Length: 250
Image 1 (tube, one colour):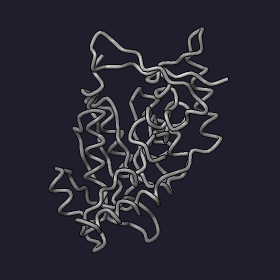
Image 2 (cartoon, one colour):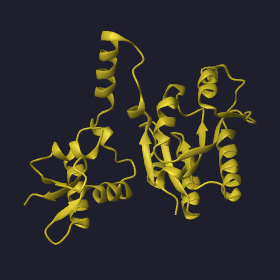
Image 3 (cartoon, one colour):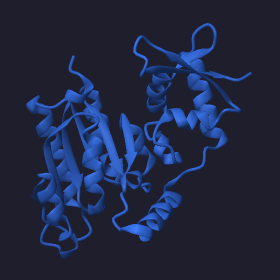
Image 4 (cartoon, helix red, strand yellow):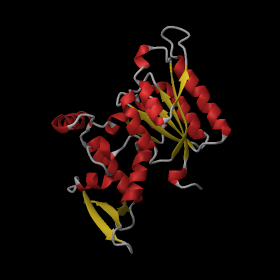
């Protein structure tokens, strides 16, 4: 069994349904899960609206695949991506796929790849339909990967504005989800290892990510809910490493 960071991932991008400015942050995010081997992006590159991709593709070594529109109003890019994904699957050279699109047309593809034992990571904007989101093992919103590009005061203002626009509220539904998940993996005393809680949360809700709620990690998110959960940070043989356990307050 390969280590998580050694997973070989095929990255396929729908140029018509994601903005080019998100790619840098997205590729850095993908590196957390494995090594991107195949990196392909699909679109009709004769269109002026895709010109902004040129620099991004060169900087990230992504191969553009030309796909003409055979009929007005029909998206032939989707078909090309699906065919290539299945070809890559049958090579046996990858352990998973990163499907980058906000289009629900890739729902069946994600399902089929998972049926073949592939890890499927989805990337898209918050407008992405839920069927595609839940068809993935994990789905990451591109908005939380954006970086402000301006300097000084303007950079701070842009960063605050972006955060305000993308941060969700932790509502009762999310608290209920976390509570039930803690109870699912808790020991006899009610304590649950936070790592196990995080893994099960993603299985239950593929687009769950602390960054959606303004937190970089799950631990500070849980600490913000101190009225709902107790936290126990247990020391290990290595003083610099602590294991975090949480328990639902009665």
